[in-house]
Length: 416
Image 1 (cartoon, helix red, strand yellow):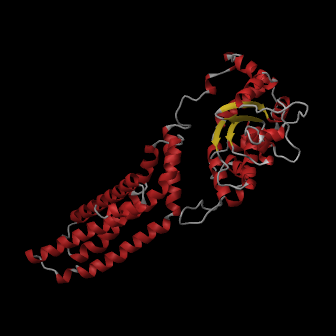
Image 2: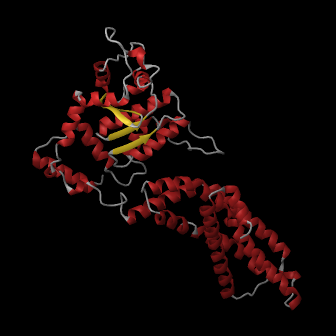
Image 3: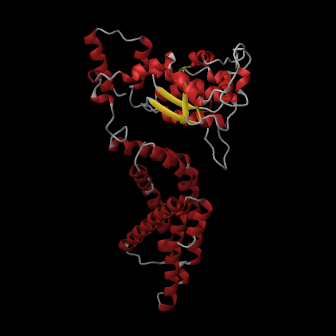
C-alpha cells in the first residue's frame, strides 16, 4: 500500500463518516511508510509464522546447514502470503513433517485466514485431531468423489444421521478415513436395533444431498453474483504485481544484496588476480625481452595468458548461478518477476568487477612486460580485457543456466 492509496482511503472514510479501528488504522499507516530498509508487513508475517527467531539465518542447502524443515515449510508459506494474495491452494503440506510442526503451520494459516479474510484450500492426509480442529470447513473425498463438503462442526452430525458414530477416544480424522473401509466400517455402527450392511461411497453421496449443509451449499451456488457490488479494480489484469521499472529496481536491489553477501568471493578472486599478475610480471619482465621476431612469441604468450586468466576468473559464476536457479524458476513460475528483470541486474552489477579486474591486470603488467608505451594502446588493451571478462561471466552463466548441474557444468566449462 502506498501513501496515495492511504490518502484516498482516509478521504473516503471521512466523506462516509467512517471511524476506522485504531489497530487497523495504525497498521495501514505503518505499512505505507516509504524509504525503510524493512517493512512492518514483512516483520508481521515473520511474527505470525514464528520465523522471527531465525530471521537472520540462512536457509541452507545440501552443503550448508540452515533452518529446520518446519521453518522451511513456513518460509515457503510466508513467501506466498507476503503479497496481496487472497486465495491459496496447498497440497500435502504436512509431508515429511511431524504432527507438532504441522500443527504450528496450520495454526499460522488459520490466523492468516481469520485476520486477512483470505481463502485457503489445504489438502492433508490423516491429520492429527488438534490440526483437524483448526479448520472451519472440510471437504471429505473418497474414491475420487466428494462425500461431504461443509462446516467441520457438522460432519459428525451427518454421519450419525447415516448411522455411524465416532467413539469418544477416537480422532475424528481417523474415524472419517476408516469409515469408507469395508473392513472397519462395521465397528462404528451404533444402531444396534438394525443390522449393519456396508454403505458405499455412492450411498453416502446420496444421503449428503439431502443433508442441510448440502442444501445450503446449493442455495449459495444457485444465487447469482450481484455485479453491481463488484468493481473492475477488484480484479487484476496485469501479470505482475508491479510495473516494469519497479520490478527492475527490486531485482537490482536483490542482486546487490546477494553480491554484498558474496563479497568475500569477489574480493578473494581479485586478490588472487593481483598475485598472479605479480608472478606474470617476473616471468615476462621487460629487461629480458628484445624487440625481434624471436621474442615476439613471448609478447604473444603474455597476451594469451592474460586472456586465459581473465576468462577463468568468471568460473565462479557457475556455482553462484546454479545455486540460485531453483529459487529463480520457482519465483518466475509464480509471476514474481520476468526473466529479463532477473538477468539484466546481474549483468549490470558485474560491470564494475570486470572493469576493476581488467584495470588491475593491465596496470600491473602492461609497462613491466614492455608493451607499446602509447596511452592509446594501454587503454585499448584495458578495454579488450574488460570485454573478455564480461564475455567469460556471461558464458559461464549461460552454461550454468543450460546444464543446471554443478559437476556436469564444471566439466562442460573445461571445453570452452
